[in-house]
Length: 279
Image: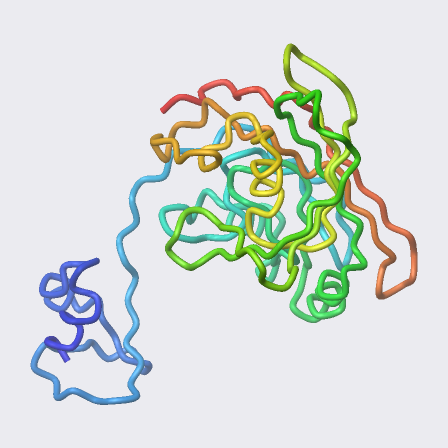
């Protein structure tokens, strides 16, 4: 078992030291020993050491809470779920503890660098009823983005193409000629400041990085986007340049009681760096 663990997770943890400290255990909590015979179809459990996480600045505010759902208005740089190097600094981990809701879970995706509204289910029993809304496209989501003004761009227009985002690859890409799987209505809401404009974005699908790729494709990449048009090298704990993309409105017919629900973010563009945002 020691040799197997070394092959499977040796690149990420000190297997020898963890075996000596009895930090690998079987389902029945017996410690795994290095010379135990290899057992196929066996679960081995361990907790890896996590780095000290820098607190993400900005307020994580509750817009609405009832028995079934919680709507939060999240700041940029706060992950929705624990992943990679962000565990404690995620919406799910923070709010499960703060609200006393151990089953709290998000019903849709919101990029770590995107600010705004996130809809969550309070318990597993409600999750399926609300997720169906997103699967059927009945949730009305409105975003606003700050991006360069283009005099020659005739708006409103609808961007339709095929987006592909591969696991482990930072950026999504457009696949020419493939069936359409991403659609966004782009409108101008206001001009300024300077050579910029605020755009109102209505996604009709929910592909990863969809809005960021669609505006980049129109030649109006969102201000302070760390990936489009080019990958910008920055520290993971540098919070000084928030992406100027805001999930500003969320509306739907509640699948449980049939009531109209509508929520709006208290944030507005341009999004400013929070105090203490530089690592």
